[in-house]
Image (cartoon, rainbow over all chains, first blue to last red; front, side):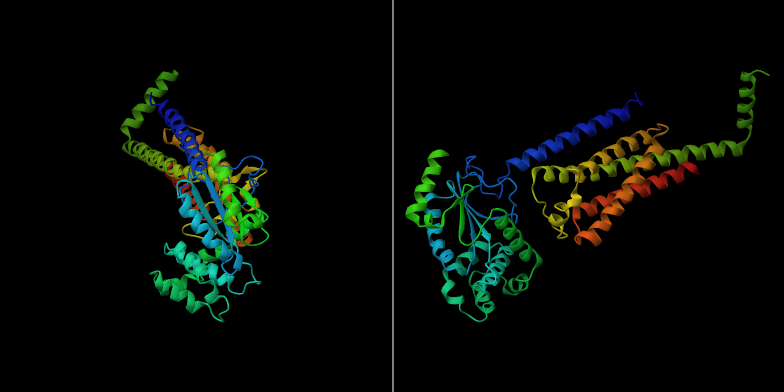
Amino acid sequence: MKRLLPFVIIVVVLGAGLLTARYMQRASTETPPSTPAPNASPATSTPVQAEPGAEPAHVLGDAKAPITLEEFGDFECPPCGMLHPILKSLEQEYGPQKLRIIFREFPLVPTHVHALAAARAAEAAGLQGKFWEMHDMIYEHQKDWHEAFDVRPIFEGYAKTIGLDVEQFARDNSNEIVERRIFLDGKRAHSLGVQGTPTVFLNGKEVPFESLPPEKLKPLINNELAAHP
Amino acid sequence: MTRVEVRKQRSTSRALNPSYVSSETDNVVHSRRAAVLYGVAAFISLIGLADAIYLTVEHLAGRSVRCTITSGCSEVLSSRYASVRGFPLAGLGAIAYFLFFSLATLAAFGYRGMVNLLTLLVALMFLTTLWLLYLQAFVIGHFCQFCLLSALVTTTLTALVIFARIQKAQ
């Protein structure tokens, strides 16, 4: 029996290893991907080779929501600022069970001189768990800062307003994680062929810019909901 | 004198020679120590196996692994060195760790011949580790914490195998 024992141990470990691999594989496929294609039909899905972007992504709404809107945005771009209230109203109208919104950083540098600083500010707030608060603040006050010479004190003021540790926030603006997240979102944007901002993907399908007004976007969402109730 | 008689004479001489008894006891103690070391090495190799399985699954799922201590996981794990002819390097690592575990377990249970195979395997693993550390430090320019953990495990395994061999040789 003693001579058989090592073989029994080896077989048990092999079995446990295979089961663990299987479990991990299942867990990773069941985890909602940061790619916005969980409900996409084959004809509309994003390329399989798409970069994943920064992880975890900034997400509003349930992982199992049938509709996913992924926005590639630049805080300084005026149409992005105009899209912001539209997405907010859609979020309220459909609710988190039906609509999931993902925000990806895509600062258009050097076209927008403060876009990168704004993206950094939002990501730095994210490190303190208040990405969306800063995201809203920056978009809603876009006109207040986009012509400023130095935006840092303005963003620090927003940080104070939303209750961040301002010193930490100022340090995190140049944090490597912040830079990395912006870079990874940019990589994802390029892998998806994003050309400008705002670019929105509805369940993996790029929504034409002219379809972003609510009266055109809502029918698209409703169609998707009808297809994936 | 027949062969049986020779054996009898030898065993008598051993019994009468206290220094021989002592050295035989030492041998038993040393091989027990070696067996314990192989057992410990087998156990530690499971850490490397779990690490390698995790990286393999993530690689095959196409997900980017997040570093929490270092910052170069995606650079390292998405580099061209992360796979060998399309096969994930982490998968090769998992196979190596499992082989190591099997051989070390057999060696711990006294199976002869396993020690040499184990030494050869751990030498290959250690050389590969050195090569991968070099790639991370000087070619890719980033370190991945999961790769560093694997390097630490392999180095520990190498040290344990060497130590076990020394124990057995004494």
